[in-house]
Length: 299
Image (cartoon, rainbow, N blue to C red; front, side):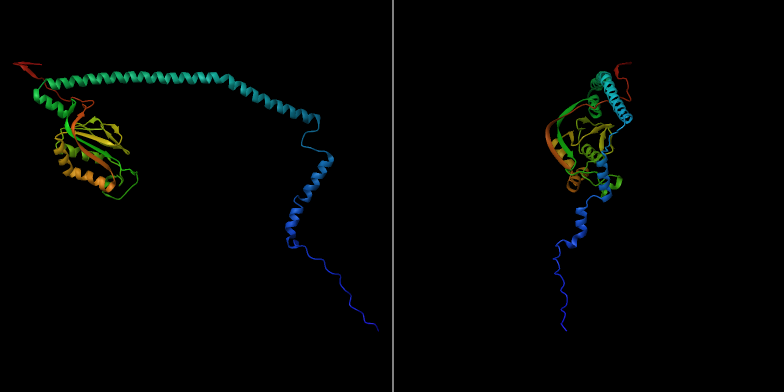
């Protein structure tokens, strides 16, 4: 009995290198879904497109395009027609504003002239009557300009001054521990100059009197309701070297030094051979008495 040999299996084909990536190959080979592909083929075979085929549809499309073009054309025409009118009205408004500004400037000039005339007459009256007492009164009240030896004190905010809040002693009244000069700082400096022997004081060219007020409006400092811009330049008439030394040794001078040392406020004081201070702006006479010019007569 012959021995049967086991059947030989056909040699297996070598596996494809990308056999493990069948899903990725399927996505690459069939990027378009079969249903979409069939619909595209069918639409191409029938010769269909997105444009209307019937006469009525074509007429409707043409009418819509004509209407849209008409609306755009009418809008452009109206804009062109109204443009000169708008430009004319704008120019008229500008002219009215400029004319009103010129009128306001003329009125302000007239007010300034009248105020200057009244102040000049008040100063002359103070200088004329009362002899030395009248001149002293005019000087102390700031009614006349003054010049003489004195000092120049410049006070400025710190370079990195901000508006943040702190916990130092300056924050006790709502002020921040920053390098900004506050109204109460300027008040102390001015009062220190008066107490050190200054005969007249001005801040940024504005003469101070016994009735001057230094207040704050936000972060701005107002002197007699006029805002000041740092740096603050204070001029004081007095015995230059003595006034400078007395002020720096005073309590207020030491306070200014603390502002410079602890808060970075910038200060500079120098003795001047001559400083010139203007008269106080809007001096108001509240009381007046007649001057005796002769026996039994007044003027």
